[in-house]
Amino acid sequence: MKQVIGFVGLGNMGSFMAGNLADAGYTVHVWNRTREKADPLIARGAQWVARPADVAQAGSIVITMLSHDQAVEEIAGEGSELAARIGNGGIHLSMSTISPATARKLSDHHKGHGVSYVAAPVFGRPEAAAARKLWICVSGPAAARERVQPVLKALGQGVFDFGEDPGAANVVKLAGNFLIAAAMEAMAEAFALAQKNGIERAAVADLFGQTLFACPVYQNYGKTIAQERYSPAGFRLPLGLKDVDLVLQMAAAAQMPMPVASLLHDRYITAMAKGRGSMDWSALALGVSEDAGLK
Image (cartoon, rainbow, N blue to C red; front, side):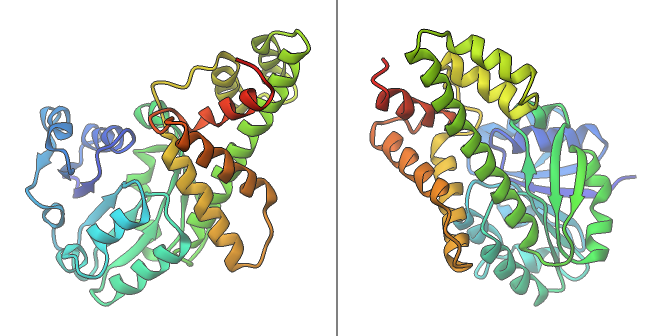
């Protein structure tokens, strides 16, 4: 019989991930701020609990998939009950995109309860989460990383190990999200340039998506930006701003200039000021079109 997995956070990603664990035969205890989001999972065998700490059993694995640092700290940091409920020998598997500094702080807090903290942020949109096609970065104590491997394999198509430092996987995750946002900015500029010269955006996106940049980021976001189709959001624009800000914080701490990240920050701030917070983070491309005088 497979073990109990606690799961906190049933948003666009977490709901699919928790469902895949239930389908894989795990007994999944779930909690979310909005109770109704758990109903489809309960129908698939998940068990609802009244408080986030109640997802944990002694020595178990608890997954958090939350939107930002503050949410993770409220659920699992100092002042919460979660680490104490997991207890000696348990694992907190943090799959959220948060700062490496927060990951290290949480790891130190967990050690006081005998709990191993493992960072495992993911690359992939909701459709990838649904299809168990996530790419997962992992870092933390070696024995804990080994123990969570079957869980990660039930969620993704590949796991990349970045060693003992609990913040390392989040460094890589933020670097990756920076690269995606930078690619979206570059595509938006290239497509606007083509459009200003009388060439269809979609034709340019199709060419590059099949040739020089034949990879999912350019193919999927390229089509979205070419068609200017930014709703419904797979990853909301405020979360893109949050991640770029975390990149800039990390860069400042390392005394490293990142001028492209600064440009992306301004794109997202402008988009937020124009009321685009409900759109996908690729909607930063609207700012490029506006700067070019395009409708």
